[in-house]
Image (tube, rainbow over all chains, first blue to last red; front, side):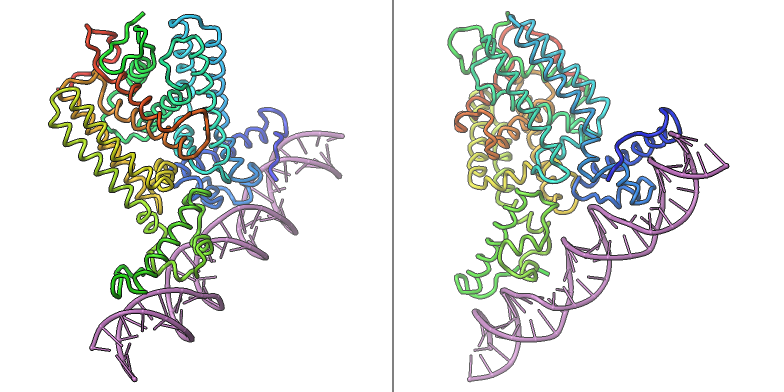
Amino acid sequence: MATLKRPGPRGGPRDVNRRERTRVLEDAALRLFLERGLDAVTIDDITQAAGVAKGTFYRYFEDKAALVDALLAPVREALLEGLEVCGRALVAARDVETMFEAYRAMAAVIAGALLQYPSVVRLYLQECRGPAVGARQKVVALARQVAHHAVDITQKAHTHGLLRPIRPAVSALAVVGAVERLLLAVLSEEDAGLGNPLEIPDALTTLVLDGLRRPGGPARRKLDGEPKRP
Amino acid sequence: MATLKRPGPRGGPRDVNRRERTRVLEDAALRLFLERGLDAVTIDDITQAAGVAKGTFYRYFEDKAALVDALLAPVREALLEGLEVCGRALVAARDVETMFEAYRAMAAVIAGALLQYPSVVRLYLQECRGPAVGARQKVVALARQVAHHAVDITQKAHTHGLLRPIRPAVSALAVVGAVERLLLAVLSEEDAGLGNPLEIPDALTTLVLDGLRRPGGPARRKLDGEPKRP
DNA sequence: ATAAACAATGACTATTTGGTCACTCTTTTT
DNA sequence: AAAAAGAGTGACCAAATAGTCATTGTTTAT
């Protein structure tokens, strides 16, 4: 069973050592997870890559699932935080500009977190669609929360009648899917001709907002209607 | 080593038996793959679920990777076929209507295949982002082909100047991501409020086309400008 | 009818795996 | 300084795993 407390004085040998060991184990595991996939990596693989004895692993983590959860924690916090703040802002929003501002703020918060933990995000993208079993459970749980929040947020935006009358669940999941796929492409460095990664958010924003914004006309135009900008 | 030929007269006992056994093994494996993930399913699991002895598995498939490849085959064929036909049609297209018609044709071909093999598609969606290792190799390879084709197609559509000046790779991957995420939601029956699945393609089409279509009016925001290529 | 090829089986081997534990050494507490 | 608690180790165990193969029964070709 893993010892969860951090004994000794802060900054003392024990404390420093514990942080360091945890970091080494997490780093080694994360690298292996990305190389071979969650399920294919054994505890032996991790301890060998980390240069410690097998028993040491179990002093720091209860099992592989606990390790994954620890890896995920910071990203999860940032993601959910960003989504909730955006949700709250949207309930208050009364005009299009305020609404877009809320979206932009959320994007900024999230983007920051993602850039800080790119490997963890890759792990998330890589595993989040699998069955919620074993070590993957927490990853899938996070994915569900993200999807739920996204739909929720879109619903809130809809209550002001600012968006095209598409089912919130549909447009929300479409956007989540688009964002995730582009993130994966960028993080995997499988250069498919994406150009400067920093320009992607803008392109995507244009694309999404023009797709979502309710066209100026009263009836829902289908083909050649150009949405008017407010 | 798996015997690949199908001996005996067509329709004879051997032939019928071989088809049946292959089907039973594939069905059992597919179900388990979706329940637990590719890596977590063992050959023993599969043969037990299929109700045959372990040795029998190796008479029909060289290993787990070969089984996955066999499962994937029909979907792969349909997907690539649809993408290529669309690509060829787009090179010839000279106006917006013809272009959209090409897209619609592709969507129809693909949708048909997907409805015919929903479980295989789920397997694809579930595994296609993982590392290209072991039994997952062929799935990831297909995902790469799909992405490549999508970008290619979008590039072709761009040559006629009919689309917004967003990098083709960006918009193509965004659309692929959106489609995949919605498909996953529908196939997983994690009802997130999607409504009637049959209405999704229409909603998505509206969303995507309005996002991609070059606005008729004068220049809009300049953020999405495409960098000049020499 | 008979020989040759095919099919199915499950025991068997080789390894690998998650997890434990007694033992030793180091740090903290008293 | 002595006792208590924490930390690291790697041998060890029981269970699981991929893949093989001799054996037995069935179908096909001659």
